[in-house]
Length: 117
Image (cartoon, rainbow, N blue to C red; front, side, top):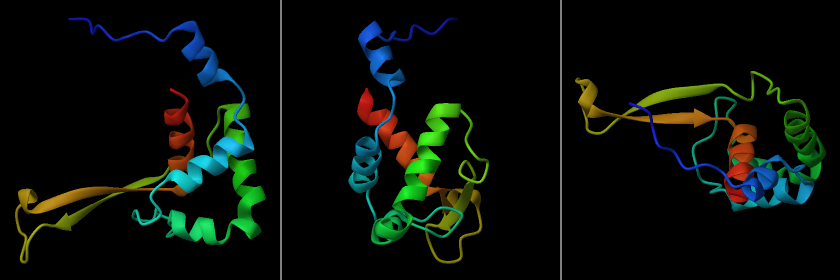
């Protein structure tokens, strides 16, 4: 059976395909919850924000390069799934809660796109 998914209007498609701005990137970064778990690299968004004056240009470059080329460096696309015990002495798979540790660059790219729709 085919899925009946809604289609984008031409205006929505144009908005998604328009060039990403530095302002969008910064707004996306600063609108993400900074207390979320860090990615595989150990950096959470709070750290990225604090280091913004030092790494901001590199962060912009990484994200703008992705949108220009459509190629995401594999290190930015790495996600680890970690099992967190729900109770002491967890033994069965149902005793664990999975969380995904997604890198900061990926989180910001996703936020930029989600805010455009």
